[in-house]
Amino acid sequence: MALQGSPDARRRPRQAWALSPERGEQVRTAAETMAVGALFLLFSLPVVTAGAAWCAAAEVVAGWHRKRELPLLRTFAAVVRRDLAAGLAVEGVLLAVAVLTWFEVHVVLGARMPGYALEAAALVLLGGLLAGFVLLAVACRAGAERSWRDAVRSAADHARSMPSTLPLVVTAMAFAAALIAIVPAFAGFMAGPLAFAVSAVVARNRNANLPEDPDA
Image 1 (cartoon, rainbow, N blue to C red):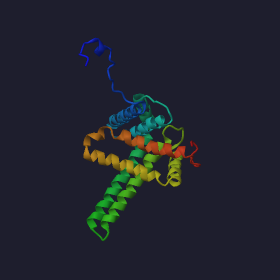
Image 2 (tube, one colour; image 1 turned 90 degrees about the vertical axis):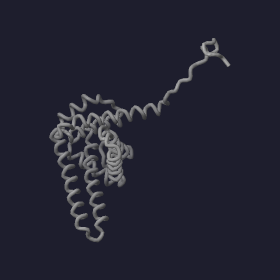
Image 3 (tube, one colour; image 1 turned 30 degrees about the vertical axis):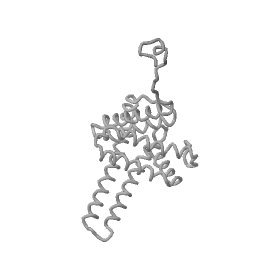
Image 4 (cartoon, rainbow, N blue to C red; image 1 turned 135 degrees about the horizontal axis):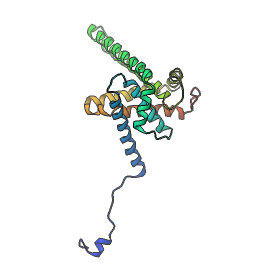
């Protein structure tokens, strides 16, 4: 056995631990999605900019699926300015869906009519599908020069042509909500992975050559 400091020990190459290229790319993507989530939280602090900040997050992750690396901070600042009014509309729709769903579920649970638990679950699912459709429309518009009307039409085409689209988006939303409920600190960056998941669903559908999607 060569002693430490001996010529044999000095010539022996040091064993280094390194990530494989694929694993390194996965770690890099995970870190960047968390950065997107943190920027979403930062730009959402005025509250009225939350919808526009979500549009910015969707813009960044849509660029990744198109092999484009957009500068995070600059893209967020530009998109929040550009989509402030549209983001307020997105934010208002999501808030209305959440409030209406909560109210209806509260009424059903309070009434305790036969089958109330099943009805409450159905209302929650319906609210999730509506919210998921809004997020899907934002993802369809992100990274493409199209109007909001075209984005909504494209989201409807995705949902109709690929029946698994909205369930996948709702599942991603449920996982994000569950993780935040378990570890509240995840709220600081969870919007990034959620935006990436929704964008991945849109990219998958485009790769499936949807005839209704002009960007396919």
